[in-house]
Image (cartoon, rainbow, N blue to C red; front, side):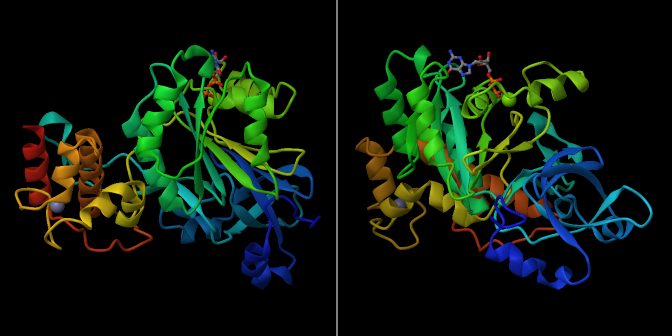
Length: 367
Ligand SMILES: Nc1nc2c(ncn2[C@@H]2O[C@H](COP(=O)(O)OP(=O)(O)O)[C@@H](O)[C@H]2O)c(=O)[nH]1
Ligand SMILES: [Mg+2]
Ligand SMILES: [Zn+2]
């Protein structure tokens, strides 16, 4: 195993090259508490802070280390303190839009003006386990949103339908999820059924980094606890020390699994606002994109044009109206995002539909 082990690969080795001969070392971020980062390096956990120069050069929040990042460190002269000098370029990262700051609150919760930034939730992940509980939490639109941010991250999505023990009609739910998560592996699990957990374990090979996302209470921490075979008390202890509720995960945390996988737990994401490229939306709604190929006109807006394959598909029950609306809603959200983006890391392609047109389609499809 490489000295840096877990998750380290040729890509990071290459980006680390310039630092190598200057006495720097690389370490992986496992947790963050305000300005202090907990790092994993050569089998040890150490704490560190970013250098003054780092802070000076960081323009946006996304420039700071997050859980899963590989950082460049050095012990500072004459003290025990370890200093983070740089973040190695992320291979993949999961992000969402932060709350809009500034601007004016208009009617119906709409905010005029203001700006927003990208919030990086975790970096250098291979698999995103989207955990959904088969209870009141179940919501197809939310799954579609998680899929979009996952596709945008560059990681592979896997859907976990947990609390299967509470669900009498599993196959109905699986069919529903299949219809919105095309080609995505779907597994049902229950913390009372160890064979289901074994399925997840299969993904934890080859030093892969996996992250569990999903609403609070769906069972992410419970599944992770079971994956470690023994009750992992870390989460609960941290919750206690910060005074927050016992079963809540207050910080994203990275755990190293003995089987060679790296697991990141996350707290529930209440608002999952998109920060992504249109391509990611297209990937989530691949079926709609395929259907549109059969529209009579190349530039069909799926509105009043004759020979529209989308409208036909909705009529025939091949595509649900909800899914089409969900697609338009995500595109519209990106359109609004473009107006307020600060520090956008990727330049979005021109959108297929202009804003007014989309609003019109939504109105029409509600009739
Ligand atoms: N019935 C049932 N309850 C579960 C299951 N998984 C988790 N829970 C319960 O759901 C609650 C929330 O679990 P937790 O792991 O903290 O959710 P998290 O917020 O996603 O990390 C706890 O009381 C768990 O015992 C399951 O498969 N079946
Ligand atoms: Mg949790
Ligand atoms: Zn059309």
